Length: 175
Figure 1 (cartoon, rainbow, N blue to C red):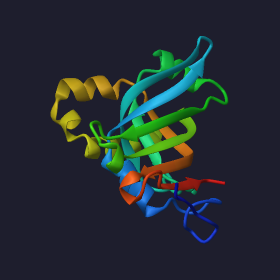
Figure 2 (cartoon, one colour):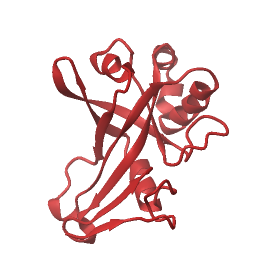
Figure 3 (cartoon, rainbow, N blue to C red):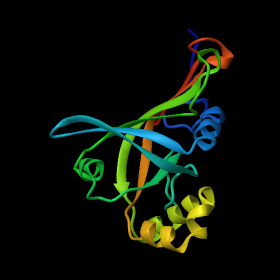
C-alpha cells in the first residue's frame, strides 16, 4: 500500500495548507457520514455539506485547513452530542457505487461548532452556493435558516485513491 504524507514544506502535515488533491476530493462530494459518540455509544448520520476556504468562514481566521459546513438542529441526537464540551466527530465522504479498483473517498476527524453572527452569514453564503436549490425554495430556505449551521474543522484528513494503486493514501493534519 502506498502512503503519501506531507511535511512542513506545504505538502500536508504540521499545520501547512491542505494538499490540493484532498481539497478537490472534499469539493467533489456533498454528503458525509458523520460519526460521534454520546451517552448511548457510537452513532452515525448522513448530512449534506459544503466546503469552505482555508481558514474557514470567519474573516481574518488563521486556522489552516478546510472547513465543512452542514445544517442540523442542535436538538437532534448528533447535534446534542457535537455541542458538548470537547466533542469530536469523525466522517467519511465518497461517491456511491464505486468499483474497488477505482474507489476514492475521504476520512477525517475534528471538532464542530455552531456558527453565529458574521461567521454564520459567511458560511451560509458558501452553503447556498453549493446547494442553489435551497435558495430556490422559499419554504426550504426558511426552514434551514431557522436551523443551526455548523462548521466541522478537520484536524486530520486522509484521501484514499485506489485509482492510483490499491491502498494509495494521502494525509494531512493540522499538527
